Length: 400
Ligand code: FAS
Ligand code: PHB
Image (cartoon, rainbow, N blue to C red; front, top):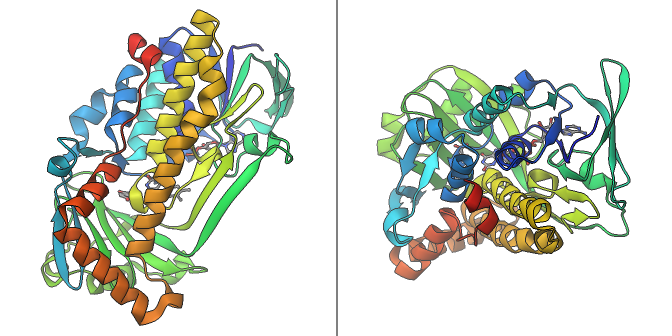
């Protein structure tokens, strides 16, 4: 088989890139090593920045996100038993975020791709990338026991943190930056109405909690749990009881509980691999970077990487220019590191770090008290949370 762009991974990064390239008439094939059902079964991100919504619109798949997504103008910070609203819309000069689950984004992109008759090879095993430093790289894989080869001009490594793409960049070239946190997030999805119409981020001496949602009838809650916690040790009742202990009295009283439809633990880490391009291989999304989900940046960074790559590939194929390709890594990493900083800062502010003891808790409460009283500090939080401006996308916008 032959294509212009081989995309490794059918998560949000790979599917969004495939749909954007299709709108520009650039041929692409996606190789995914799991089934479509498995990809859709993963419960992950819940908050979209405007940039991500814009890219879904350019890809022609934004309709449901606009119709069913929940625009959010603010979030609440809970500490010392009190909730304080951060007016994102007012502080960011009119911007907002949209609550729309990653599962729905993935579903919409899968449906659009199938509708366009584009090729996605699911259950593609033993994917290997070769010749990434040559002008005609190849991808080898096994499908139904048969060895296959895909020839292409470029490879987009959208295969997440555990994928094969990043590992194909020579160790002498790749630089890794990482911080692993001593805790994870125990998440529960339940068909119960959200405790509040906006997200509540809680800093408590018992640990962090987050109250989020997927719709007006489906809620998503998270509790900070120590490293090594096993999900089987947490009954639904244990989860709801602990969540109540981390909420203020009004929210604890309003909380509606019910059976979990999904329960899992996500480890927290900050990670960046540089460069995000080597030869004809481009890394995008979790393949290149991981953020702790506190700042709701993971999915949104994947979208902005894809926006930069889409812009660069259009420029290459339409104008024969390599400017965007040559600057891809630098353009992505500038935005990646700012999101890494914000996610690290917000995680450091909101979570319990045993090693910093009572003094650390008091310092966090002092910073939170200053933050909610300071217009400057709240503005800094708001403009990072809604997403920093992204010098888009001259070529991309012409397509959309
Ligand atoms: P993904 O990991 O989503 O997709 C990569 C795809 O590549 C997968 O389908 C995988 O099966 C496939 N793949 C892997 N290796 C392959 C190979 N060798 N060959 C072919 N295919 C291969 N972000 C938030 O903003 N908020 C959250 O609350 C949040 N929660 C998260 C919880 C968990 C458990 C995890 C792991 C991440 C979470 N994230 C969250 C971040 C998450 O949303 C990512 O940012 C997002 O999935 C990134 O999308 P992709 O880059 O497409 O990577
Ligand atoms: C979610 O709804 O899954 C979610 C929302 C905000 C975050 C992280 C996760 O910061």
